[in-house]
Image (cartoon, rainbow, N blue to C red; front, side):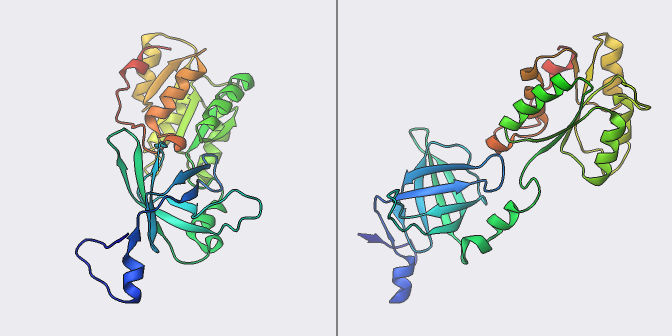
Length: 269
């Protein structure tokens, strides 16, 4: 039976608009359109109205305000007519069984005219940009491949001077740089000092990598403003964890926080 929204008693056409029905209808939900963290899942609606739907899911990547492409009802038969609509997440709650229930509100307009697809056309839309300064191409490639699996957009250069030029055009969210200068007039320490000394760049977390593990190397790295200092060679997974600590990975949304304890990265490789 249709269920009215509590505290509201519409009549006529408005009644059909605000009523919701408890039905079991399949829906396809697509998110992250145009980004590396795009996903798709098929769920069964708990209830549906003209303005939106409520669905259960085991996926933890939903957050309020997120734009999605929703097809409801959905059939995967080749002859089926499926009309996708743009929807926005208005609520995401945890169920007693440790699953999730997501409330979605349909937005007016055609999907291709919505902000969802407008954002998809932008370069690196909704992504976290990581700038890596690494002279070892093998290490650079390994780190880039691992971080891209998390949805980060990674740009790698060999010299701090190249990184400095790129920063002037587009500021990254994280910088990973080796401290030693390899055929360059500035070092990773210099790059970090420049970033931290520039008002509109000092918010960028810098992770420095040193080939020496002496206390003075760690001290000088933190003195110029580095938030994490690792010894080279390092395990790529270790660097991945360090990046996650200072910038939430896109595929996890807000699953990580820069406020987490960084002490375990301060004096170890």
